[in-house]
Figure 1 (cartoon, one colour):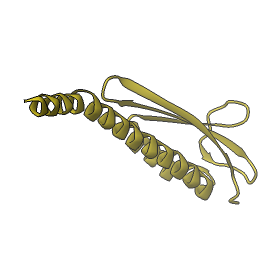
Figure 2: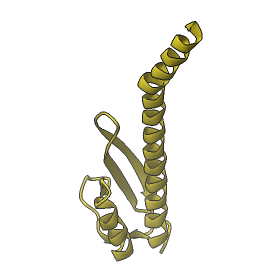
Figure 3: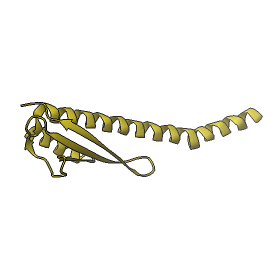
Figure 4: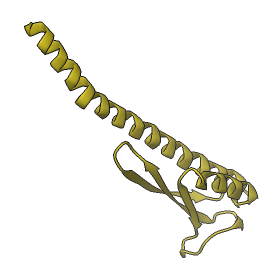
Length: 118
């Protein structure tokens, strides 16, 4: 009888505490990994294209539907668009909003890209 009570208690503890915690950690980890991947790939795309071209704009527009807000600015704080000259610096700000298990979460970061394409 004691073994049955301890088995029921351990199952209830797993279902009530451990499983939701593991699920929350797993979901947040997936979103964090995806956010870091997007921030790296967009920065590389801007570097390859030599600025904020139509290809970069299409990628950014497709990411808006997934919760990303990406802005491109120069060192003066002005919004950047189009090809840039060699040596220009572009500051890319990423803001990602997603629904976690319990609440809405926000991730934010910034990359700096130096244009190396002529």
